[in-house]
Image (cartoon, rainbow, N blue to C red; front, side, top):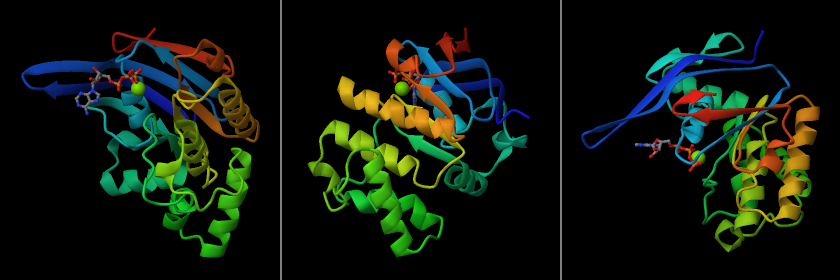
Length: 221
Ligand SMILES: Nc1ncnc2c1ncn2[C@@H]1O[C@H](COP(=O)(O)OP(=O)(O)OP(=O)(O)O)[C@@H](O)[C@H]1O
Ligand SMILES: [Mg+2]
């Protein structure tokens, strides 16, 4: 069974009097363990699609099955549970808590999942090593550079060992060296079984994926 099966997904935004049909008829499937990259022009709906896949937003039409479960029919509570249990999300705009330190940001999902403080601390340490930020637990997020924030966001996304990692331009604010490190990390997690769907504008970054799909005019090309 496909881990992700999206069929005829539609999403329209109403801004003022104008209707903006962002997703018209999107069909997309991913096998468990697959690494898929999504490319396409700015504004073509990549983040919108990823948000729906992560249970952050709802489509207006079509269906979204995850392991055969109909996520498109979930209510808010079911969606919140789905997000925490199955998905690690790396946001385009990080969504970290700037006044909190790195450790607290990373362990947030672990706290929701009911892990004890000592375990959270240990896991956060391990994650920071993985993203090249060992020893930075106590730093406040607002003091970090864009690239460091990006890496904290990735550490947080993978803290619960999610089955699926959704990454929206995960290397967007990194220099080449740190970008390559993050891609190697994603590739490693993929090798350990994580399914990854990643949005990128960078052909080289897309080259890490097994398959690249292109979005245009609200559809997959
Ligand atoms: N909450 C919202 N309300 C109204 N319109 C929105 C909303 N979110 C996105 N849009 C519109 O939907 C379209 C697609 O946005 P989206 O963020 O999915 O694009 P994208 O492909 O991720 O672009 P980029 O590459 O610049 O990140 C854009 O025209 C955007 O203005
Ligand atoms: Mg986007």
